[in-house]
Image (cartoon, rainbow, N blue to C red; front, side, top):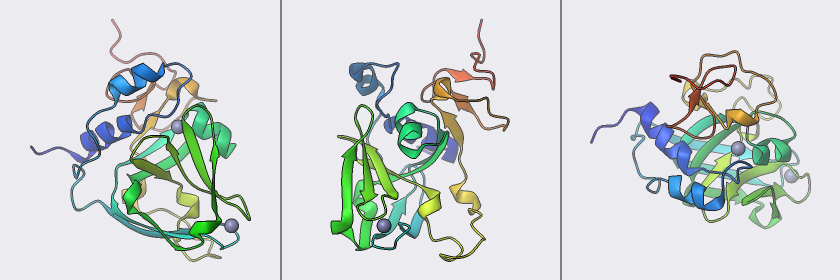
Length: 199
Ligand SMILES: [Zn+2]
Ligand SMILES: [Zn+2]
């Protein structure tokens, strides 16, 4: 079955269900779709290196892009101290370390979320909900223009496709990306948070 990039990303994004303040665990499990498969297409393969601030941890992610979204959930935002958080998902087996794997400390976040941080500089290298096969990476850690380069503009294929957990937003977004109250495909909302296509 041929799927569009966006719909695949939508399906994959739903799989990356963090501990939500508004959904029970059973509800989250019930909405978790099929495991990450090669639905994005071979054109969307990440081959990306990145590092923490101090350089003790260098990682390499090579594999299919599962999702790229701006997440407003409390688990993401609280841990990063910013909202929304641009998360880029890959299958966990696709995350490898060039150096410093033993320097990564995993700490508990909100609900099911866990965060992998450099134990020396505490840069957040990845996060994932416990039990999921996905990890979320963060573009600011990516080696884009060189470590000291001011040029950090992301290539188009990394750009976020949607807002998720928009109900937790700190402010309304002004872009034209699709916005979802929690996760797609249901409950798409307008920029002011009202349900789209409401009766
Ligand atoms: Zn570090
Ligand atoms: Zn989140």
